[in-house]
Length: 136
Image 1 (cartoon, rainbow, N blue to C red):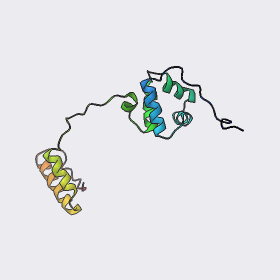
Image 2: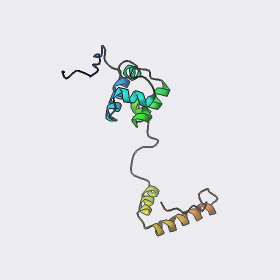
Image 3: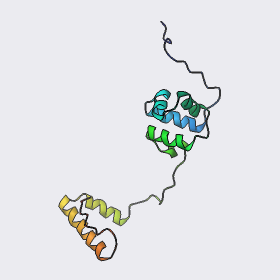
Image 4: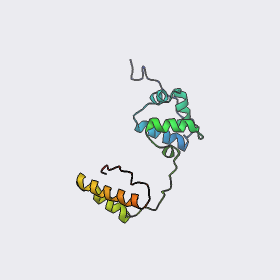
């Protein structure tokens, strides 16, 4: 018996994989899955996974969504697109910095601060003063 007995030998690619296919294969391997295992998770054939990894440049929305979920990555990661941040990165606002300091306080002090915020919001007519007094 030689080292190749029992192993399925895949045909070498005849052309370069698409960018999408490369990202899909990388995500699959990073998840520790074979093409067959990913196919089982997505309820498709191994040939479909092979097609998407080697030739397809236009995956369906349904395939993208299911593959991203199964591989624990975002659709944007598979597509190679980046979401633009909603705001410029930079130092936290004064409010964010203060909230982070409040998170470090003992629970009883956090509750006091939260009660104060709820009272102010309620008195100013804004939602939020709804009596939820859970500490951060």
